[in-house]
Length: 238
Picture 1: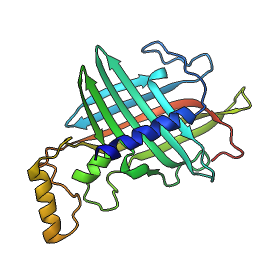
Picture 2: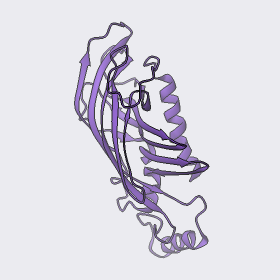
Picture 3: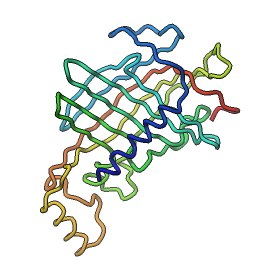
């Protein structure tokens, strides 16, 4: 469980490293103005359920990761919104999402291993991480994981003028929503025993574990984004 939880974080870090989207310039808190390159990024976040958060991230607090695919429409995309204040840190992240397309934003997109969305909170030395993979294990009644994938919808993908021939500038506007869950680091014996007994007697079950018995918790995360970003030029927009 721990292994599958951290794999997507490593993928996200890799994508961010390979993004090649230019350097970051810090933006003053609360400012909605674009930076010196004309780039403006903002994300609103609403989390409800076992955890409640509401905030808006702007400028450098919004992360964009991008990895171009070899085939049209096979690009990987990640988005994140950070909030830090007085020792507390919150982050809502989306991705890696496979199937992002500049030309066809409505094409089907897929979250890798159902780990497409995460809500992470930290206060001093205490932290918690809700993710879509855990939601699949403890709450999703659909075998295919239909309730565990991120809904990422674009209302606008607009190509803007770029002064750098190596970069294409786009404005991305849209919304997101996903279910996520916090699972215990060490499930109790009752939790694992009940799941094994049910499987032995009745066969496969979805979800595989009893959320209440296993002390899992769930949230719904949703929000919107308006991001102007530079991306590596490709032979044809994917």
